[in-house]
Image (tube, rainbow, N blue to C red; front, top):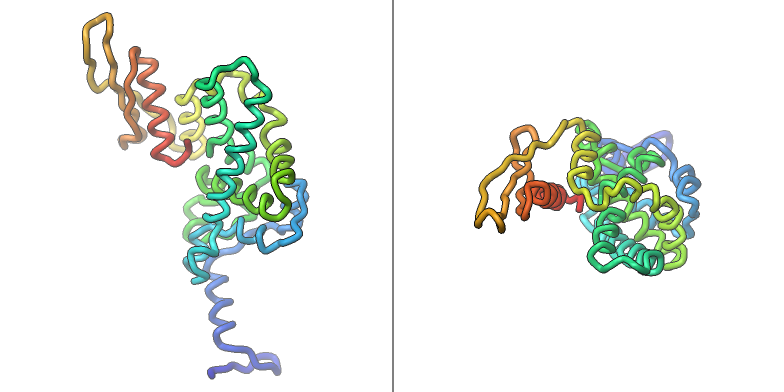
Length: 258
């Protein structure tokens, strides 16, 4: 087997190559201990925390295999978040109908809100990303931070159980539900889309009519939303305002933010 002398000791060449791959993948810039203090949770199994912070771009470069990324934990965290928030809303808003509860939940679990919470603790600075992802702004990308937030929740659930996960969600999201909902944004997909496009430096979306159908008293409007000339989504409604909202919702879905 190939070996290399270094500092009076022998190390396997494979270890050297792995180290080089890790260096080329880029590194996090803050410690996991610091992140745990911000989360208000200390992991018994820190391997779960480390996996929650590994973006797929990192494991591709380090050749650790796709299951080493945080995507499986994100999948689990998404389901845990859905359960916790749904239960909370059911108990908190006893007089709201199912449709409105669904709209509120859609906002609270959206990637836009999760990324906002992640940015408050500088979550992007703790992530393992490839150098290419870092150079393209990955540490601030809404989808990456939102996904990592869900992966962290999945890791907390596996490490400490449902109550630990619920406590984390209550601290991170549910303590300021009233503030999040105060301006009616849960009914306003246009506001969510605008917040995302502005946070990524891409400006304002444009809403353009496509067509109209039906008689005047039952007209259906079709509208598309574009950003920098690219079509993001399409919606329809009984008013132009409703059609714009549905177009924004469609755009958020295509962007992976809803």
